[in-house]
Image 1 (cartoon, rainbow, N blue to C red):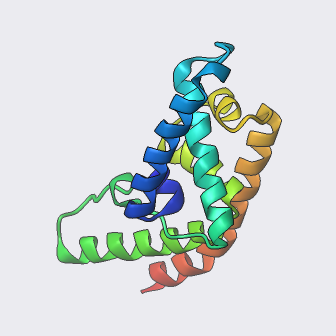
Image 2 (cartoon, rainbow, N blue to C red; image 1 turned 90 degrees about the vertical axis):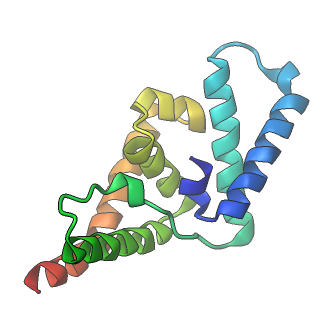
Length: 151
């Protein structure tokens, strides 16, 4: 999940280590109002978003496992790679908040309530960010996919 947000394997490993260290140091603040999983997930997502803000960049996200290849032919594999690159580029243009919601919903397959708990926002905010994130992705990707489909 961290890698999907930050798009860099080394940063993801560093942030995972930082998340566990932060969890260990602040375990006394865990109140049990949510599951431990949700608390740890929330802490981790927030660290990933904060890292993106600090760096002032939005790295590419790997989605190779999220895009199934229907044909093993070289043409199909090339198209799959090309589509994946376009999606990665489009995701990199989203704000960290929109990217996090898209990743949590579309890649991690969390429900709205779970995303709200993880990000410590309302379900309405999750729905809004998801709507606007998808809309932005659609506006970025539509011309590219129209061009791909014409060839």
